[in-house]
Image (cartoon, rainbow, N blue to C red; front, side, top):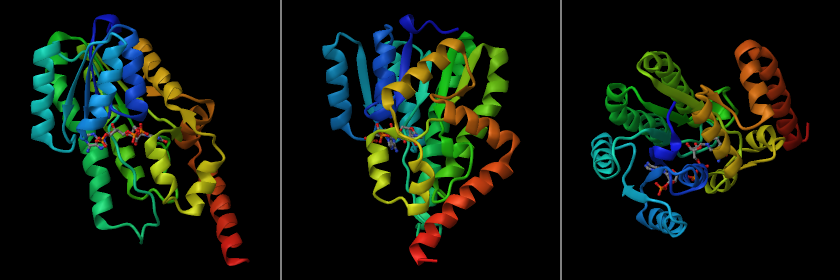
Length: 272
Ligand SMILES: NC(=O)c1ccc[n+]([C@@H]2O[C@H](COP(=O)([O-])OP(=O)(O)OC[C@H]3O[C@@H](n4cnc5c(N)ncnc54)[C@H](OP(=O)(O)O)[C@@H]3O)[C@@H](O)[C@H]2O)c1
């Protein structure tokens, strides 16, 4: 098991939301932090706040979808803080909408940032983790990576792909002493949720509206607990734990529940 107190933790998407909360919790446990995101200003602000609290932080402004750039950035971060012991891939984007309204580019972007932006950082750290027989990798998928949700035809498949990748890596890397986990947050109160709420079709809002968003700190605590306990499926609430069980065993039950909600919204729109 990785001792967080002695760890170099790399967090993609570490400048905001869930990634920033994970960074804060790991730093409070003594980890040295490397935060990765595209925009330098939020990265600098996050780093300044964490440094002011006495934590060791460095940053890299890079697009995780750019394989060569992210590989080079992670190599540089490891030169300064030592090999990566903990990798949390939280960088991600979402574009909800009706299938026919989404642009081809939306589908490409979700795969490129959410899936390939998870794959490339993992590819960059795995050889050294395997060589050292030490490491923990947690990818952030989603509740929408457990079940296909109305309005997420671009996002859900990318998050399914993240979960599929992590399931394979769990088996392949366990014999090498490397832990792999898959976090599946429900709606979480972050800038991403505020952004997508502007564009969610009403059917999507009806399905997710039954669930009160969790705080980023609560989701982050579940991720840190998942690292400590070397869990594979990392959930922060009972509803998602139930969803994971039902999606695996009784998909028909979920489909009819979702279909009912969609019919209700559509009837109310047509006045039928
Ligand atoms: N919030 C939710 O309801 C929810 C639910 C389930 C799953 N999730 C997943 O949780 C993860 C974190 O989301 P969040 O809600 O914390 O979002 P957030 O607050 O918007 O943070 C997203 C982070 O990812 C970075 N990022 C985005 N695109 C990037 C790229 N191409 N390269 C590098 N960094 C990039 C952002 O910084 P820059 O923009 O500066 O690059 C930011 O640091 C995502 O994978 C998301 O899909 C969120």
